[in-house]
Length: 120
Image 1 (spheres, one colour):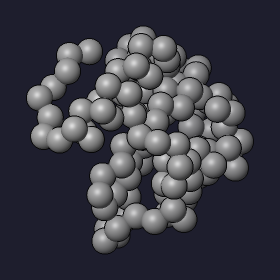
Image 2 (cartoon, rainbow, N blue to C red):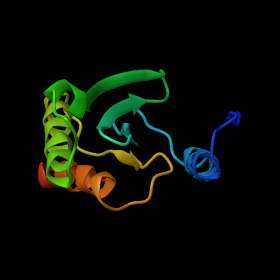
Image 3 (cartoon, rainbow, N blue to C red):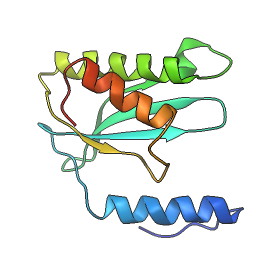
Image 4 (cartoon, helix red, strand yellow):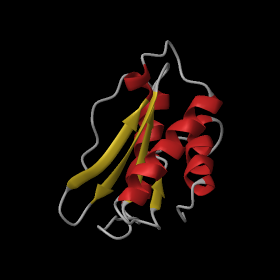
């Protein structure tokens, strides 16, 4: 991956972590990569097949017209994504935290996926 020009040192460090993570994990149709992005107000997650470069399904807190996303809402998003994946007969996935620390909303999405039967 190519390093972008970023505004802050914090953003640059996250991108370095993101590149390091993405060099080790890939997703397939049977075991997609679950990529999570967290902004200041919202969170989104998508299941990606890296072999075909296709997004299988996606969920976002923007779809709910909520003013902000909490840990509880992030868990609900994980459960919603798990329901979509189950409908596609997917039972396993690889979790890509996208350079973010694994706590709070990012961890809640993973917990929601596990609660509905997706093995990470």
